[in-house]
Length: 232
Image (cartoon, rainbow, N blue to C red; front, side, top):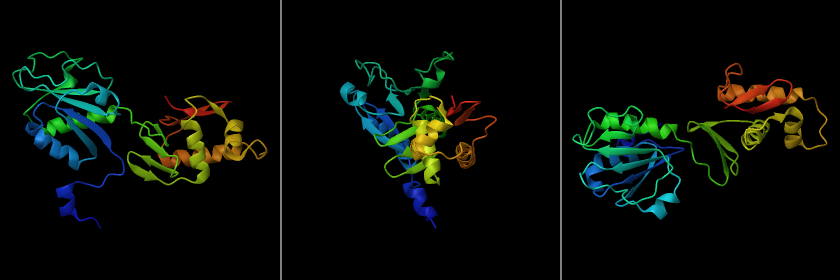
């Protein structure tokens, strides 16, 4: 049984994490925020300056840039980064009537750390998970192709080998529809002559384990008369 007191001190154990990059000229000012983030399921990297070459090479779920000190923009001169970004500003810098389309990209610091963490969790959670070389990722599902494991929202999902192979085939098909025959050949080879309804049985079981409603699918869509594909 986990030691609750120890967990409060060091944070919960995380099967999966998201990566947050913090850029601040004075990161010590953000220490309360950094401490909270590191006890949650985030890998936090801190830079004092916007290092374009380094940042551009990283897979980032959320960038936090500290602009709360007037005249100091840690991203000055850095090319636009294609990643979700949250800008910390002072209360004086916060516009009285912020643009609704841009309001979610700013937060006051120092400020309510609970509200800020909720904003960060919302923004980081909406970014697409980054897949490693031996992984396949779709929405909140992450497959480790080398270890043959599947996680959904960080929780391990126990699949049979056939269910794993079906899910892998769908997730690596680039959104294309796979017929039942396509799936049978991928799973059991071209010489397999079993009934195609066996695929339907495995799909049903897979959906149940993923909590996927076939009437309102989040993961696997049935294309009538053809086969299956990933949901939009």
